[in-house]
Each structure stands twice: as C-alpha cells, then as structure tokens.
Length: 221
Image 1 (cartoon, rainbow, N blue to C red):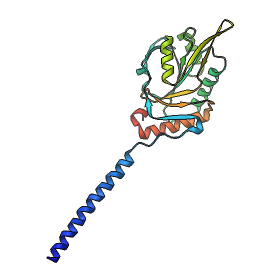
Image 2 (spheres, rainbow, N blue to C red):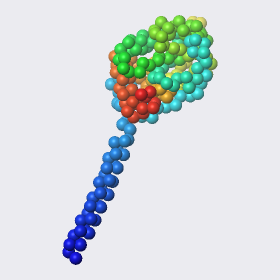
Image 3 (tube, rainbow, N blue to C red):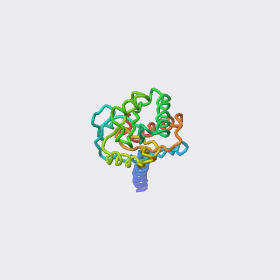
C-alpha cells in the first residue's frame, strides 16, 4: 500500500507540475505576443499613434491632373503637409526640410512620398502644384480640388486652414505640423515644428522599425 501511495502521489505531482508549467508558459507567450506600445518620440516633437487613425474618404486632383482617392495613398509611407504654393515662409521652409530629410534617409528604409495638400485650391492648379512640388524632388506631390474636401482631409490629419484678405491679397493661415501616413494610408504620427531634417529622419526610422515588428502589414515590411 505504501509503495502504491507513493506512486500515486508522484503521478499527481507530475500532473500538477505539467499543468502549472503549461499555464505559465501560455501566459509568457501571450505577454510576449502583445504589441509593444508606440515609441515615445517627444524629443523629436513627434506623437505616434498606437492604433493608426483612418483618413476621411476624399476625391481630389493631383499635380498631374489625375483623380486621387484615399485608396491611392496605400502602399507606401507618406509625409503630409497642409499649405499652399504662394505661401511666403512656412511652406517653403517645410518643403526644404523635407527635401533634406529625404536625402538623409538610409537606402535600406522604405523611401516615402511627400504630399502637399493645398489650402488654396483657387490658385493651386495642378500645373502650379507640379511646378512647385517638382522643384523639391520627384517623390514630392500635391493635391488640390474642392475646398470643403480639402478642409475635411486637413482635419483628418489634425490640421486646419483659414482664408483672410489683407489689402486685396489672399492670405492663408494654416497648421505647421507634418503628418505621417503608414502604407495602409492611415495616420500613424504627427510631427510638430520646428522640423529639423536629421531629427525627422531619425523619427521616421524609429516609427518604421516599431511598425515593422508590431504592425508588419501596415508597415509595408
């Protein structure tokens, strides 16, 4: 009887140990499988969304006169800036910083597009956008079209713009931040000024590396 009891107790102990080990192992696996929170990039004036935000649906015209919708922004990373071609200061500086950023990006990273969303569609014709964006590089593009649609798109990247007239001249007050869209065409991050090319490049690389691990489909990896 004593030997049988010892065998029974040993068997029970092994079963309990196995169950405990499987339970702990499952918890460790689930914990390791949880997505890592978005990186804190406050040193780069950048806020990264854990869950990217959907853009509003839209139909606009690009610098080539072709129709562009939300679906056309999928498949690549895109920096978005809301501005206008007659802007005297903020827009040229932002676009120049983006061009420098583009030149700093390592070749192994996905090369993004840069998109100017016009806040002055009355004057920003496709031809004018093409001349303006083409000066900064072949991966710089523009969108123009219906004013209300442009306002809605700007709002979905947390930007606004307001028209006012001074001495018979139209001036446009607009947000100065950049928005970064992931290859799902969703808002992944907002980058506040001042925009320093080296910091923009570093922030983009950090965001991409995080998304590659935690959102591989959306990262384009």
